[in-house]
Image (cartoon, rainbow, N blue to C red):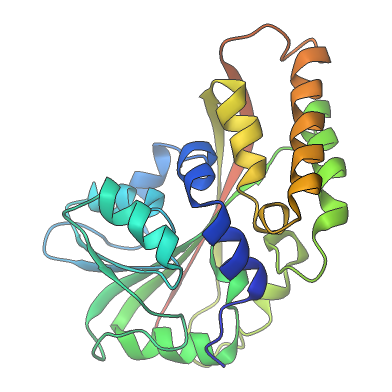
Length: 255
């Protein structure tokens, strides 16, 4: 099955510009993880699978590796190509990458693998990787121990429906030890700092299952977010705020 989940296809097409503005990048410490755990560097090739608007591709390119971005949603590819003209961008899915076998030293899926976690996907990643190559999975997870972050989740969670999410941990099911070694996890602290209209409002409006809602519902969510910014003492009247995350990075080796 190569079909893109409707929530991703519709939501990310509608919200590509919000995604580019509002989504967090990754902590600086992830660069060391990319070079150390995934082995990226000059002379290496990294496939950024589900590359979105290019936030992870930009990070991977900083290692000196050649980065090839694979992204099925046209609106996201357009954002990526405009932001990173030096990176090769391909239209493809996780189950059918338009790449030859054993062409990559690493495959990176940043805030993406939950969309296409399956045995078929792992087989395709295994095909593209060279022997001993690395698979890296990364997610920025909101720190809901902070009260206003928990309030945002309470506002948005009722809209999720059957949308795949990292928090369900269902994405782990395809890993049975046959094609890849056991996943090893690294957790890094991260704070996304910027204007609240971008890192809170645009961030949440970029969530696939929010972006695909009818306009009236999207407007209701936006009003609730702006109300939160106006009334919460940690947010009210501030030009910049800090949105707390934990970055969860997993890696495994191709058998």
